[in-house]
Structure formats: C-alpha cells, structure tokens
Length: 486
Image (tube, rainbow, N blue to C red; front, side):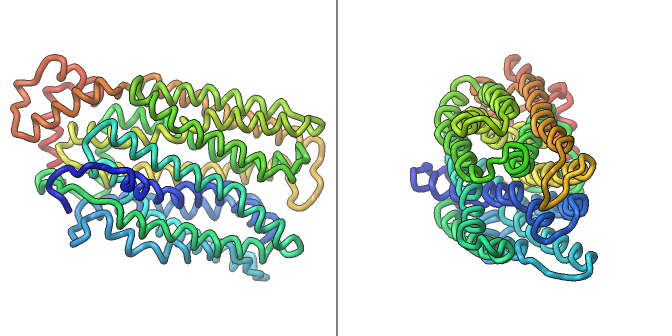
C-alpha cells in the first residue's frame, strides 16, 4: 500500500473499471432471466421464484454490513480491500454457474432448497468482492474529478458488461440450444461464470490502496452499530432515496421486459436487438453525463437522466403488437439515454458519501458505506422480484401458455406504472441532494483541516454552513458525533 497519492493513469482507469462487468452484468442476467428460468424451465410458481430471491437477501442483511466492517479493519500485505479479489475470482465463476443447473427434482421443496442455497452462495461471493471493490474508489484518490472519472470508467465497463449480459445469454440459449433450454441455460451459466471471474485478476493488478491512519480506520461498537450510524448523515439518507428509486425502476423494467415483449408485444425475436439498442445508447451517453456532472453536479445529471428514462418507459407503453419494429428500437434508445445517468450517478456519488460520513463520524469507513449500497442494491432486486412474482400470479400469468386478454392488459399497466412511479420519486430525492463540485471542494478543505488537528471552533463561516447542510447536523454537534464513533 502507498503513503502518497499516486497518479491515476489510463491503465488504472481501465483496470479498475473492469470489475463492474461482473457487478452489473450478473445483476442484468439475473434480473432478465432468472425469474423466467425458474418459472418456465424449472417449473416452479412465480411466487416461489420470488421467495427464493427474497430469502437470499435476508442473509445479505447480515453479510453485507459484516463484509464492509471486515474490509475496513483487515490488515494484509495486499491491503484491506484488494486481497478479496484474489480470494474471490474462482468462487465468482462457480457460484454464478450453479444458479443455472436444472435440478429435475420431483420434490418441490428440494428444488426450492437447492435454488435458495445457490442464490445465497452467489450473493455471498458477490458481497465478498464487490463491497471492497466499490470502497476502493475513495482510497485511490481524494480528487473529486478523478473519482468521477474512475466511476465513469467503472460504469462504462458496467454498461458493456450489461450489454453483453442482456444480449448474448439469450442468443446462447435460443440459437445454440433451441431444442433444450435447460442445457442452454447451463452452458450460458458456465460461459458467463468464466467471463465474470477473469476481470478480478486485472482489478487486483491495476489498482492500489492509500494507507489510512489508524485513528481514522476503526470505530467502537460492532459492525451493525457502525452500519446504522450512517443514517446520521442527511446526504446519506437522501442518496439512499434516489438510489433505491433508480434501481427499483431498473429491476422492474428489466424483470418485466421479457414477459412484456414476449406476451404483450409478441416480438420475442426482437429481445436481443432491443436490449442491445438500449444499453449501447446508455454506454455512449456515459462520457457526456460524466462531463456534465463534473461541471453542474451529479444530482443535476441524475435528474436529466430520469426525465429521459421516464419518457422512454412511456414510449414503450404506447406500443402495440402492430407497432413497427423501428419504434421499439427508438423507444429503447430513448430509455437508454436516461438509464445511463440514472444508474451511473448514484454510484458516482459514493465517494462524496464517504467524505460526508467522515465529517460526521471522524472515520474513513469506505467499506461500511460500500456495504450499505451493495446491501440496498441486493434488497431492492429481491423485493422487486418477490413482489413481481406475486403480481404475476395475481394477474393470472400462466407459464408456457397463451395469456388471457385481461392478463395482457394488466401486464401492460404493470410494465409502465411500476417503474414510472420510482422515476418520479427519484427526481424528488435528487432535487434535495446538495453535493456539487463547489460544495465538495469546501467539504474536502474542511476535512483536511480537521485531519491536521484543526480546532472545530475555528471553522470558516462558509464551510460551517455547507457542512451543516450536507450532514444535517449543527456544526457544534459534529464534535460529539465524531467522538461517539471513535
């Protein structure tokens, strides 16, 4: 580990970014296909399929904050974060592949137990590598612009991974194994398990950690208490609102898309092309949003993206089975313009959350902050899939069958209304997010003064006002808060 801040070069941006090919790609495959695999290949009910994911997330409620705590406090020759990339790269591949084994068990409970176990295993391995990975950004550099570039690189690879994950798996299943979907899903799982595993060696070799002094590393109390103290920060609470909104909309849209395209629009052959158009557009827009965010702020970029995304969802909902295919592609591209910012900016905000948390706690808790976001991301997907499983049962969806006109009508309403609601709530939360390039520069300067032993009674009036706005705590009370967390 290094005692000085090293320059972040292009090769480091690339190496760091490759990790999120797994972070996003695996979620895309699961969001798009896992529910369909369980209902239409394995043959279990939608409600039971949703319950499998939900049960796995109850485990995450314990494991994610624990992993954040471990990576904040671990000491190894490879650092407290990067060592997990070496430990985890083989389990990444194995755990993903096991999800797609068609068990062929006659006993429903045995089937339920197997997929619950494999999903918990996948989630645990995901936690082991992704929480240290997402904490690494703030420890490679303190610079707002460089951090945003690191996030931009991460999100470009994230979207590339998402593009591959949204198009290639279905091609493997449908084109290579059209007569045996069960084998197609298994081969897809093995291929993508290898694809997701390899980048972790690249991340390990191309990144580093800056040494954090002991007095800023460790806090008192157990990991759960430290996790809960994040809620003291106003910025953290607002960010969780816009983050949950964006990814609830994403998971609802992704999970319903295959059902909507196949049954309502009757254009299942357009699946890979449509998803490709959406995600390629999203990738192209990332550099533009990064530049805009560095000038006007990440919340402003997020709001613009959510508006475009809402328009894209509305355009999808206006289509009918008779609509020409080019309108489907144009709707996907419009949604992709918005989806880019809506999914990139919440993660781009993470280093700023870490800085605000340090102001409140006096500790550099990148792992706990990263763990909270990873936990929320998993819980959002679990709750969304669980609720959608119930709703599909409620509207009368029957796997591997023609759906009634009534069911198709409800499916169209569900496809539009559910994600659109969260687009609106995300915009509301983002309008209250106050970390901008200007306020972050003041926050960074005040943190440097406090790290150097500066007296909290000698704070600059402008810095005091900004710190109070970002933390939601009177500046005079921050000393007590920092002392309690030490």
